[in-house]
Length: 244
Ligand code: IPE
Ligand code: IPE
Ligand code: MG
Image (cartoon, rainbow, N blue to C red; front, side, top):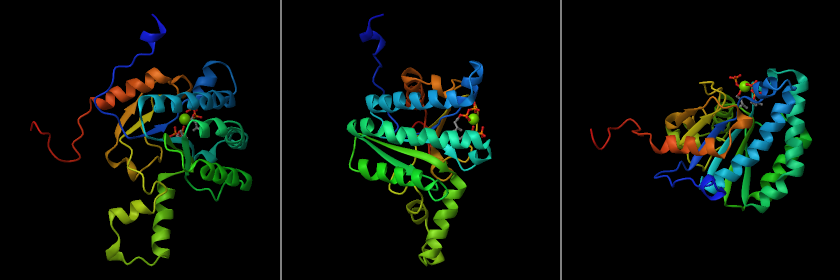
C-alpha cells in the first residue's frame, strides 16, 4: 500500500473535544520482552509523543493523560523515583518541541507532594506554554479523583462559600480541570475495565473505551479506532433518543 493510502483516515462525523487517556500496560509490555519495568515506561513516554501528534492530526482539542496516580506511591521506591526522573527528562528535553508545535501543557493533581525541583519545572512549563492553542495536554501526575475533590471542598470551605451557594458549577470551578469541558471519551489501554481514581467527577457522562493493546503499542491507528467507536456511540445524558 502507498503511504498515501496508509495515512488515510476517513473523516469522522463527530469528534470528542476532550479525550482522557489512562495510559496503562507499560509494565506488562516490558515483561513480555524480558525488560525491566522502566523500559516499559520509557516506551510509554515515546508513545505519548506519537499520540499527541495524532491528537493534533485528528483535531482533538484537549487530552488528559493519566501518568502517575496518588496510589502509584505504593509501588517500589525505585519505580516511583524512576517515574519522577522520566518526567524530569521529558520536561527538560521534549518541552521545546511541544511548545514549538503549539501544545499547551497543563498539570492536574497535587503538586505539593512532589519534589521541589519537579514542581518548579512543571510550573515553568505550564507558564511557558500557556498561550499555545493547538492542543491542550493536561498531564495528570500525582493525580487522584478523590484527592482532587477533597482539595476542591477544602478550597470552597476556606473561601467561606455558604452551603446553599454550593452547586455543580461551584464544585467544577474548584477542580484542577476548572474551565475545561468534561471528557467526552475516556480510553484505557491494556484491558483493565476500571477508572483507578481518574477524573471521578468529570467522567460522569464520558464514553468509556477499553482496548487490550498495551500503552506503548497504542499508536495512531488504534487512537483513530477509539475515535471511530466514539463517533458511533449514542449519548443520551439521561434523556431519550430523537428516535424514541
Ligand atoms: C501505566 O503502566 C503507567 C503507570 C501507572 C505509571 P503500568 O506501570 O501500570 O503497567 P502495568 O499495568 O504494570 O502493565
Ligand atoms: C492507573 O494505572 C494509573 C495510571 C495509568 C497512571 P494503574 O496501573 O496504577 O492502575 P491499577 O492499579 O491497575 O488500578
Ligand atoms: Mg497498570
